[in-house]
Image 1 (cartoon, rainbow, N blue to C red):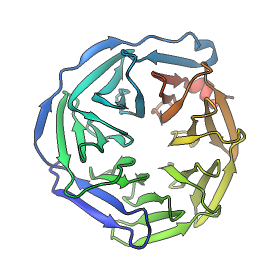
Image 2: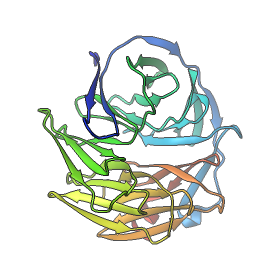
Image 3: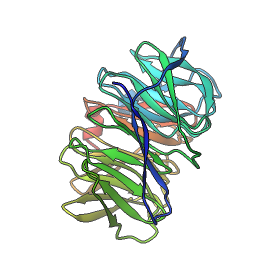
Image 4: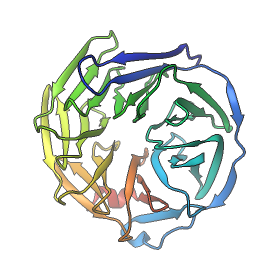
Length: 315
């Protein structure tokens, strides 16, 4: 994959200013030497949960993603490392530069992890062998949001909210201030769709296996689904739950985090089910679902957790 550079797609009159497309390239700027640390496993397996404690008290895991081989990657706030969990062992892979608000994280087909680095104004790739390559942005950015890797290897990232790419190469993004969902087809045609709830506080989004778009309405405490040109909205039972991230499972369920409520949520067949996390001080932030339907989440209090597929399908 040879990136040709970074292009910017403007959203015109909307105040959420930019969506970025990165088409790979650049040079290796650092070689990471990871220090392996065994994760501490929580005692809540009977509830379907297993949790791994961060190696250091200062480690704050933020975004999380699972590679095809089962490796769990996660970003760390105010850290010069990215985390990796494999075979029950947490490894911190050095990146050579401290990161702030590392919200964007995705894995490509080759198993390399891509993440946003707002402080350095760059997009960075960590390959499976630990080589770190950074690609600086040519213009200032206010805040980098989520990141997604398309099937053709192009890396899309949003400023400042969320972006996802479906299997056909259509790009979807949330425009928070405009309260709209944006669509960019592969031929460049762009359309926007207004969300029914005003000032909904749009956040993360994901595309399911049928091409439906799922998105968080954090300000309205709702999860929405967009398909066939229309929206469905589902109210979260817990008031003011603090919705922060969303992911779609292979079985079609949409999962999300409830930061203030210390819970995970699932939408399936139009019904929301909530799963209370084992610790009362839990602050779940990022979420991902692996190929076996195990649900992974980051906890800002210093944990990586997993809800087993058997429990995730029940509830």
